[in-house]
Image (cartoon, rainbow, N blue to C red; front, side, top):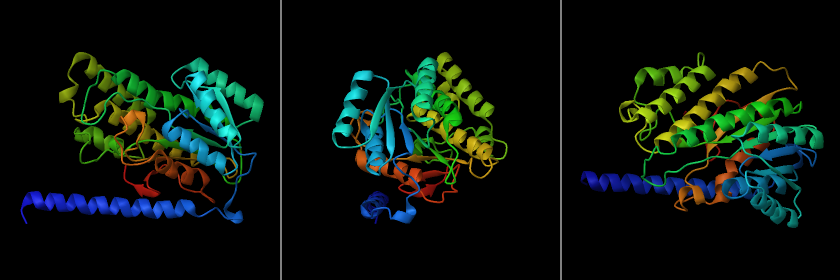
Length: 320
């Protein structure tokens, strides 16, 4: 067997493994939660950002289908209201409110509304995101918008939501939709600056300041045209770094949350939904939005959850 045949055989085996795992998860999804597993009720409130379509819409649908009250959010009012109406007509308890995670005023208005109407929230799903690159393209033309949305916007939303998280024996949950492209040691999209990679891997000393400084350095190099030699990932560069940043921030917050007393715990994790057939991927994915939403639901509803600061794909922990 020559090298080309070996590579094809390896790809075929990988494809078979992925398909087998998809079938396993499909079976798991078909098993209803038993009464003693259900820690939630109709009083449980979840917020899903960027939920008017794609993965966010499916996360909203699946959480609401479990009897949870879900707030569907969207930047655009008309499309958000229409999406919520579709779910409401299906008998689901879904409310809508406008939310733009890069707009401070929008976040403040949303949080004030949630506080007044519901008193707080129990679950936050950070799904809102942006990417300009599709397939093998690698333009950094929209790098600032990508970083500002996927990292800084998500970070602002999390910080604003923390005071709204209601105390409970089960703990509040934050789940962020991320990507394997943001892995520190990914084969295709790793950071090639060894010193920086080691700093970002050092969980004990990892800080928000280091993550912010890394994003600032990248954006400065984009502006002066030196980013190609900066040791950054060489494909889907801005999107990969935005997800790397939010993955790292997840670990920082998990460490911070770990000191909270029992009854006031917040568990935070991120996950990769896979290459999902959505507008963001140009409908080029292999995973349906329903499948892409699954791990978010699983992490949100885990009974007796003590998992925090981890990265998942297909209900399994993977390396950052």
